[in-house]
Image (cartoon, rainbow, N blue to C red; front, side, top):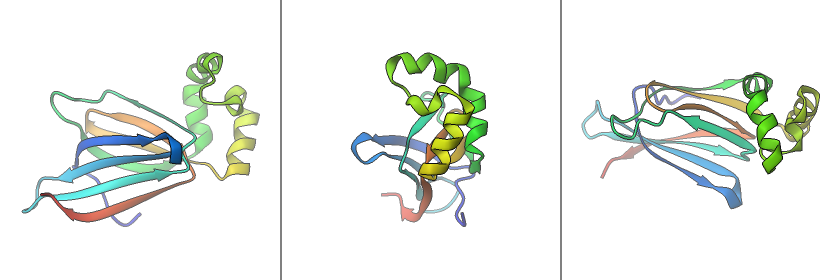
Length: 136
């Protein structure tokens, strides 16, 4: 991955449905001037975020690649309930269907962890870091 978002504050995130992209906008405040870094997930098929600390602020710990099947296993009950509403898709109906979908569509799993606040996961084709933007 190269760049890190460790100890970056989450400024916000944007979900762009039409292009299946999620952008986490972050800022590292321990430099002068503060440095902004975006984490961009492309080809998103599903995501889940929780515990967004709007009042205190989210401080990220890491964004790391994880086995997408481990995300399916962790969220199996949530996926089963969501299928009634068309979320996240028929591929989530069983571990076999999910594994087949992930392989055919080159879906990767990403875990988002924090020291304080938002945590979650993203199932997407790719993730990239856009670093080095100065706050302003």
